[in-house]
Length: 238
Image (cartoon, rainbow, N blue to C red; front, side, top):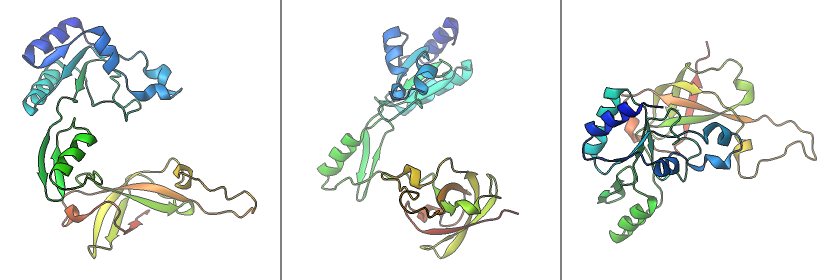
């Protein structure tokens, strides 16, 4: 929890930016759909922000961040919260940043559309249709990683931090990266219809395990990578 004095100083520093300490609004915005989970609910149900700010411009975002850093108050950013399960809950109180008002469609171009962080897919679709285009999928391409489905028998000596060489079929060249994280579950367990290989046949099937590989920034043609491309990773385990 942040002291009331710090909260008031923070609100003074952000000036005309919309803010409130109304408990009803704080309680409503401090929770997302974590109540779906019997594990998360007891951990998060008592979490509460100290102040709620509702932003509508980049200038307001900058003012809030500067004031929060100045007073060393934690920031939690959220949108509508409908797709979150604990990610938008203010664990340490502080400032809860509501981005739903920062929701303009800023540009519609041939084959692409640019929106502010709080925009919903419906608004983007409406803008795309108005320009004679159809919105099929929203793809983020500025923070790419590779999910390598290694056999479970290949993971014994693999761990985060190891160097990786990645051959990209479409680019006819190799990129470098590192193992970022090891899998928590097999790929088949997260599929819509997971197979039951031990039912009826007793044949052991080697499972595939999704390993995340983070590509090193600043490499040539890195911006040409797109989700779904085929690559062949080689992890140096020595």
